[in-house]
Image: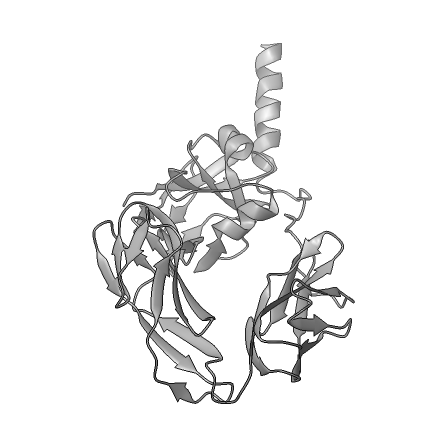
Length: 312
């Protein structure tokens, strides 16, 4: 009987941690340094100023002094204020860094006259197509003054095993994956990222362990990012430490040990999570369909409040 009482005490302590005053660690995120604009067009000798935002590991924006770098010193220069200057014809590339964090690369198209093609914009109605499906892309060329230029384009696919593209911009899905379609003219390129064969998956929540979980979740793709969205009518029980996880089990201890923690939540209603970015901050990669369940978990007690099974 003594051991039974001890076991009950441990169980009571675990359950109370879901409704008590436990201190829960704030989930940490990766630092992020973003530059804008993402692309720019210049004549030789012209300059423009980069702007930036830095988000620290707590998810808070912070004022910093990043270092700016050029990957193409013969085409563009950049000083430590973020001022970029065009030096010669071609495609220039610059980026910024702060500590161990690097920004994405900014592309600068440098042209010789106001009549030259300086930018190509590729557009389409979808970013995800099925295997065997077709998608027509359109390309438009512009000068540095945003005047349209009539021209023909050369089309190519970064990975023809995922999707092919013909001379008219018609894309055909071949196998599941990601690829970039490029339209080029006069040395200038425009790109369009697509995914093939992914679709979306939905889940309907049900409560567990005597707790509430209602509403739905949808997993979809935005470009190459996996996005999880909880519906407007999502509702769950709350505790000091209620988290959303992706997992392949509904057992609380296994979810916490082996699942992917997306975020703590403190209110009902719609929530959106960029699964790809969250995984990257943890040094992980995640693929579409890798996880079977969306879990609502009381973190301190490793107790499942509810779950939904993702199905296509």
